[in-house]
Amino acid sequence: MDMLEIMKTQQKYCSDHRDMPNELQIKAKNLCWEYNQSRPDEPEKRAEILQNLFGTCHPLTFIEPSFRCDYGFNIHTHGLTIINYNCVILDTSPVNIGKNAFIAPGVCLACAGHAIDAEQRAYGIGTSAPITIGDDVWIGANSTVCGGVTIGNGTIIGAGSVVTKDIPSGVIAVGNPCRVLREITEEDKIEPLKF
Image 1 (cartoon, rainbow, N blue to C red):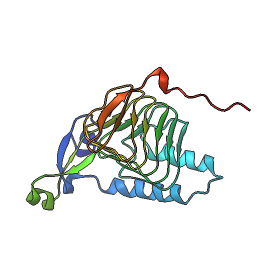
Image 2: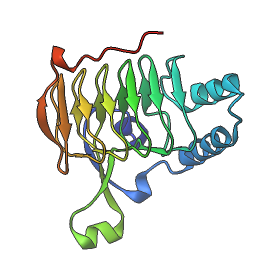
Image 3: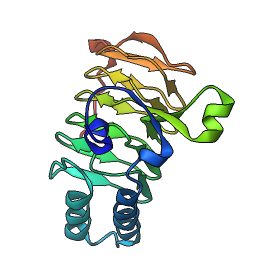
Image 4: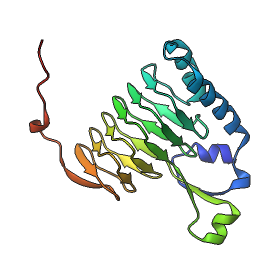
């Protein structure tokens, strides 16, 4: 397997920075730059850029600039996806985002990591693991989701959380490190205003 094939697997891996396909980042950086310079009244242009950037891009994927990613080809949206301002996705491994996902401003999805040993880190040894976000997930503002994490269907991650371990379905989880606060129940339903 070459490095590109390894990057596209669901397996965590360790790498030397010299083995990474850094030339592919240029394409992603150019497409992100183009996307971030697009006008709010150019939805077709934005959709076309995302189709060229992402590995899988559902037509109902909407991202507010500014948006940044490492490669793009490892990002996969599988239904309605709303990503708010200033999101960063370090997609050195696959990032799968389920349908009806709401990702608030300032969220970072970071598959990439660095060696714990300082000498290895300075040498450019890194780690990577995939991120999976289930259907109907809401990730609150300024949260970070680390590599190797799966967030279950229907779960809410509270603002400012740092998610380092898997979070089950149907819960509200908050904090640093992020922990389950409680289950989501019927009592959480709200009554919208009627005009």
